[in-house]
Length: 248
Image 1 (cartoon, one colour):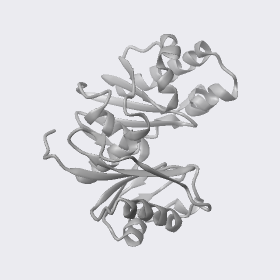
Image 2: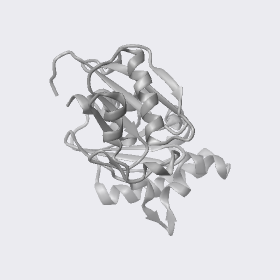
Image 3: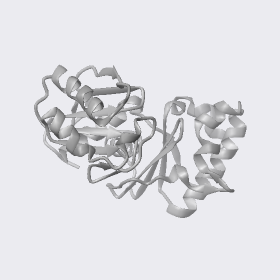
Image 4: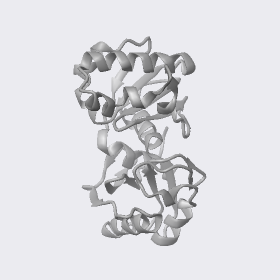
């Protein structure tokens, strides 16, 4: 995808912290050190939007911006809420962000933003066809990009496999909770990814989340027909993807 050398701005909203920075949309790198502010408690839409405005003001950013959120996002409306206040459910959050910040805002699911960033600037840069990003953390977040186009809000971490919600067995939190060895956890990931493969037939699987930094420890125990690689952009992926989607 060709574009002029421009800057965008990305915000990444999480249950414990909100971080943001300007992004160089040619290189896919942060154009300045990011700022992180603890998520306000209670984390209502208005309170969170106020923190977002604080980050934008800190960089004197006047233009539009992209913003990730840990939820299903349909046309600016947050349909779910993970690790944030329940008042986000069915909230017109895009409008709240625009009203409080005074800037145009694009709200997007956090895994979707990370997936777009990895395809454009990260581990999936040379991939063609269908790319699946799966973030392995407290839960399993997913993003599906088909021939460069995002298919939003794929909640594939919640597939029912063997009578269980998939992420309750295969997320990194399950590994820690049950004190699983890398090999034991790899077996569960194999079951999960092979199931997803049979539904999507992806050309590449990119694994994100903090545990992706330990890819060499557990990946030998995961068997898939699809090539699997660790994410490259890590904690900056959401910011970069949000800025890119808002710009486009």
